[in-house]
Image (spheres, rainbow, N blue to C red):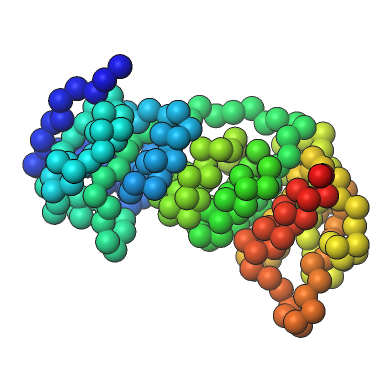
Length: 258
């Protein structure tokens, strides 16, 4: 099915643009609108590569004549707006020239046996997005975010995830007791408890739990852990950034499964 002719929108007060401005600048607007905003060609291409079709494609007026056909014809509806309006909507210092509005994926049921990443109140959007990228890269298909974790489909997490969202099953707003449905072992990192990661026989599939940047994994989740490990730091640092720790642990499990 081909897209219709583009519609030129020039009013800042247009209802669609007002909704788009909220999607771009409010971290939780996607929950109310049930839509997400992908700004820039990288995220848009990642969605198309996964077979997703945007509800709306938005192009700046200067870029529209240059837009590749696959983008220009991708959406159910296409709008073109003045460059100044694109800058007004954008959440970036250097506004992108185009973006897609997609319907928010329907909530999925927790998959008990899936290799998973658990996020326990991880609050920095950059960390969350980076961990989603690591999960997708190392074969962890499910991400389970406990209450208090940064909104998974927020604009900042989407940008940091660089398209990883579309390779993952994402479930957010969980309580710790809901993780009891998992049939894979829960693994946690600790600065003070457990053997070193490189000395452990790691189960796979499993569910790695990563905690709050300052407080770490909470007691409720720690009590559910089948295995606690430490990451050796011969350089003498006290702790690692949570996204770096996640990358190390997920990679270690992925190579242990080979």
